[in-house]
Image (cartoon, rainbow, N blue to C red; front, side, top):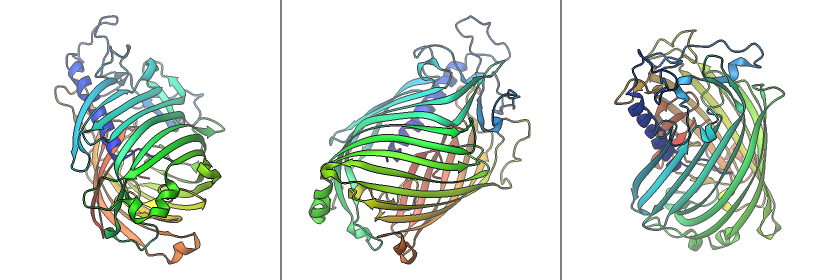
Length: 461
């Protein structure tokens, strides 16, 4: 099952910042004390439903709304009307970007994002991300989401129930610098090899709160297909994976995988993306039922966690009349994965990357089973954020930091996990929340291997 990679997350952050800067530049022409008349070309009021310091006053939710605390309120000031071009640089944008890596060369790309896709008042999101480097690394990805439960608010704004949604993605990637260190808990940093992975993928899924919108029981179902063609890697000074592990590499190349995904969890958290309190426990399976040669395999995951509100360090915690007051939290999480059947080496449970064991590079530890425990203190430094240059009308909603510690291990099976060597990492990171459903993070992790920088959209657990 694929997850948003750090580079794509950074590109998405750039895109959202472009949206905010563009929106600020446009909104700067509006005087909130003297809003233009409806029907004029500038009828959009970026202050509608928002205080001038960025605070969003709480609203009275409809009496017939099930689980009202589980619905996210988006004020009218963040819902610019109009088609794709009329909303350009406010809720739609085109952002070019340039990057450089010594192993893949100079890269050029463009991101096209519409956070109000098809003019559905924030019910749908769509994005396309395209990049190409001088050494031939490529990434073309399309992402779409549609929230199932959506309500208009009398007087302006909308309510979204964020647990229930449809999602789809597809694309083509040609990565030149995938890493593989071998199988098992005793591999060394010096065992690093690299390979090229040319990947085509498509995925479709649904998350649904049952029986009513916002309820604690959440069902996840989906299907995906992946096509991999492997080759020699481009990491400078490192051997090719196929030369060091010829049998393992040959079994995985090429790979055509058809997955079914299913999950069920009990979730009392007040938000799925940026929770302040509550707990969850659940399980899911990612089953590769279609493979080259008729093999069948699966990865089984059990996870749980709890979020605690804790005393604030740098702010007063807001007030009860606020839509979502700034809240510092302590998060703890545990995840265990077991694999069964036959799977390519790159689909086995692993530790390292942007979400688990952030002090290690992605895929640093890999075997048939894994576990990881995490604790993270998330605290806001600027609870009201800060205005984007050119105007006070558009703001970064929150800016903060986090301290984290993680421990985990991999082993040949579940029983062997109890005696496997435990690896740990720790670190700190920065957090920016453009709104409650759009948090971004950059983490610096430390481990026995050194330092690793990871980025992502949303929290790691």
